[in-house]
Amino acid sequence: MWLLHHQKKHGKVILDIWLKEVRRQNNPEKLLCLVYLANDVIQNSRKKYPDFMISFLKVLDPAFRFIRDMADENCRKAVLRIIHVWRDRNIYKPVDLSKLERIFDTESNNQLPSSNEMPIKPETEVKNAKPGLENFSMMTTKIIGVLRKLEDPASADAGVRQQIADFPENIANPALLKNIANREDAQELMDKINEANPVVDSYCARLKAEMSDRRMLQKLVADYVETLTLASERNKEMIKSVREKIEQLDQDKIELKKHIESLPDLNEMLHTDFSLPSAHDLFT
Image 1: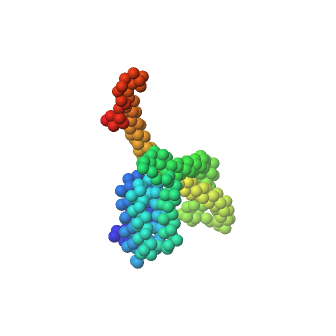
Image 2: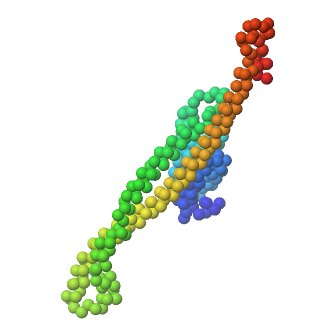
Image 3: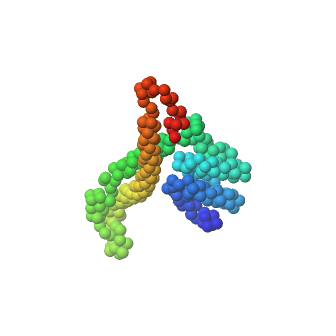
């Protein structure tokens, strides 16, 4: 299998991409396919690549929490069956498998008592959207924090840049060392180097921190856009479901109005000997 063959060199990338693909899906069938893929990789890596199998455990928890919130009951049951297989084959430690099972047990305990009526999908989706909203708020706060740090970046510090530019060229150009004629010239150059060294080191450290912040911002923005896309898709599904239910309610109102209009006038019935219509006559 390609994934196992490249796991040593690209293990972290494989796990990150798998988790990212899980979080991009809202189709239960595609989510289940990704879980089946993980199952194949995990079971096939048990003997030859146990470290990769253990590493996979780190992304299973967030992935299963996402599946719990997004997938249907059939998908959740299928995932639980896979966890039971792992338990039977001692793939992971019992305590780790129990944690994965509790992810779905918690969701089941929070459900309302079962009835003959189907649960209202929009309400369920609103509850499921809360973790996503919390994550969205956290990401927003992080992005604002990084942007504030980048308001005064090291790369825009003209004063320090000019200070570095004012140092003589020979402190950084080895080719100019041949111009040193005596001990005094060497000492003067050393003094300039000692003066420039902390300035340059400090500025390089600031530039390194700025680059790190910019990379973090790039990743946060990418995740932010992805979260917005997922939220938009969920909202579209909710709107579609609500519209369908409104249409159904409107249709029920029309039918109810017809039934009410078909009821006999009781005032007229008091002056006649006609019997009241049966329930079957009213609703046929």
